[in-house]
Length: 201
Image 1 (cartoon, rainbow, N blue to C red):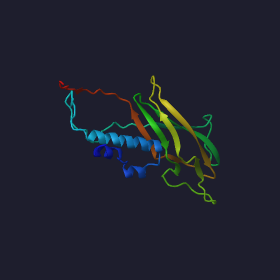
Image 2 (image 1 turned 180 degrees about the vertical axis):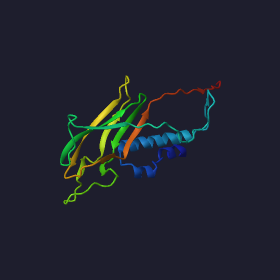
Image 3 (image 1 turned 90 degrees about the vertical axis):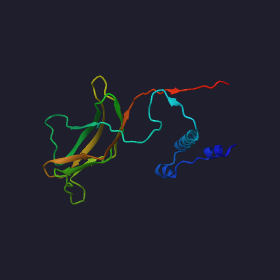
Image 4 (image 1 turned 135 degrees about the vertical axis):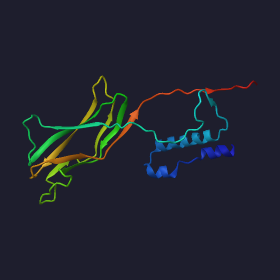
């Protein structure tokens, strides 16, 4: 076995990646195989010429994408006569929708849900030390994957929260979500062509 082959087989995963990611035997094996073949490709000398002119090497640059985010809405009450009182609890729904037909939002998660007064300050606390207005759960609230809209109708996922009010002062409050995390998944396709020259034996 050549020295190069031994070096290829002993290629290790980047130590920083090992420290950042939890131990996963399958992911580690896949990363090891990827590292092996990337090293193998780098050792090759001859490159086929593309059919259409394009840069010889793949660089690294920031791709400017249009801004896209899911749509949030909060609803509560079984009738228009309902009112949120300073004592009691209300069950509300948080609905997250995707109004785009060519992308999906994956791993949508509200990291934290908080309630503040109308100026963004913490709500008043009770003698027992608890806030007079609370929300449960406080986070994280997961919505999974929200697929593309279809036939002009948005795709939505809904979760429930409970607003618990105890001796709260009457007035306006702010229900805040953040951070809200998600991955934008866009499905595309491309073609590739290379010139292959064969030499006569």
